[in-house]
Image 1 (cartoon, rainbow, N blue to C red):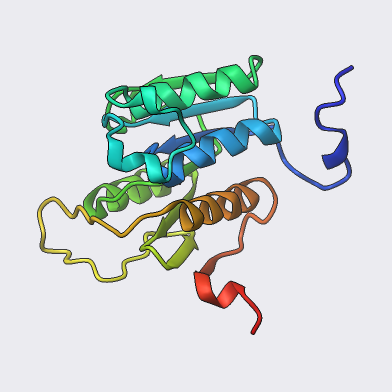
Image 2 (image 1 turned 90 degrees about the vertical axis):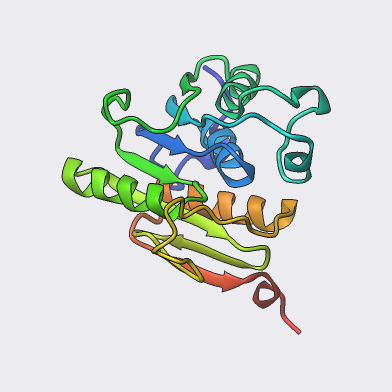
Amino acid sequence: MSNLYNRQRNMNINRDQSICVVGCGGVGMNVAIKLAMAGVKNITVFDNDNIEEHNLNRLPVPYNCIGMNKAYVAKEMIKQMRPGCDVTCYKSNFDEVLADYTDWLVDCTDSFKTQKMLQSFCDESNIKYCKLGYDGERMSIHNKVASWDIDENDDSGYTVTPSWAVPSSIVADLGVAKVLKYNKSELGIELKNLYIN
């Protein structure tokens, strides 16, 4: 028997879930990888975007991944780390027809319009929804779409946020903890408030 997960025994981590991650940018790729590292065996990832150089300040991937699809790279990274993990990747936007039964949908998208659609889908399908986001300094982990300074009248609803490795990693890690252990909890915090003066 493998010793891989011995140190998380008796920690009430629910690895026996099917989890869908929509958006494999700085937050979503980290979420997918950390889910696999924690022992989740069934992960589905969606992203229609390719990795660009400016993404590398927050994606834990090699430079030669530029130009590759983000969902595909997430799958390949997971398969290298956890060969037994069943990872399905879709190089497309989320499509409810393609989404197999899932316990959680973790929304890591930058489009308010997409976020509202995903939350609605989860509400109708009785799937737990978690929206993860940050704007460079503020981080949020919510059970519903959290809008900060979003113009709901904007057709695209797309938000370009200041991005770097630290908040994207922190919000991803805390989001994984929510999904695997602290299901009902929510969080909204600024990075500076994590420090004690």
